[in-house]
Length: 293
Image (cartoon, rainbow, N blue to C red; front, side, top):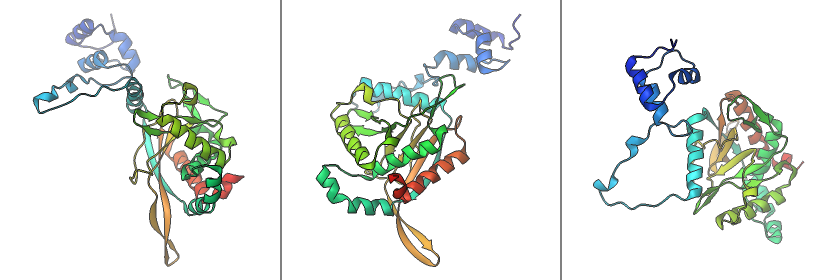
């Protein structure tokens, strides 16, 4: 006789749906199973999603519609992000960094950037700062196994760069970013972004990132909560630089600040560590001389 508590109607439903009540109870860590547990198990798609059958609506009954098939690339990305949002207990920590020194350097180095044929954006500084911060906080440079019982710490630093393209979001990767200088990183960002737009990124140039950056600064916004891109355990979001009034004693001073949004997997990273991580990162951005060491 089973020790699992379930009503006759629930057991009958489990039999009809082909669900093993004992296995389900062990999986859920429970001794009592209800009909909602059976229904949720049977109707859930791979990845643990909820029943979406009620989304199947004939929208044309309400007005004119057209259909646009999702590309295979977009479908794969969609499933991965949906699983991430459903399964990862993610938290977003917000901060900002003073970019006065970075903007001064970009202006001073503009002639050299032109002579090198490199578009020297602030993103190069962000990649460089993130690479060094990952070395200082190795728990962020890690991945959980699918079962969630083992943390894999990486002795390399690869930074993913989210690129908005007409055929969907692509995330090419800058390998060994912690070993590269600002000029090389700037050149690689420009090259990867251009080839992503042209769909000329190879499979070996995507995947394996330690952490990714998604930058909306060129579009707008003041904050957002990026979705962690598994198997990474954190992602950094950047939005448009804004002028903030900072008080130097009794004297107000306008300072250009870039908003930062760090989403992280709470199974691996706690809030205090996230705050320290982003504070360290902001210090590097505020004084980019540390990035040139």
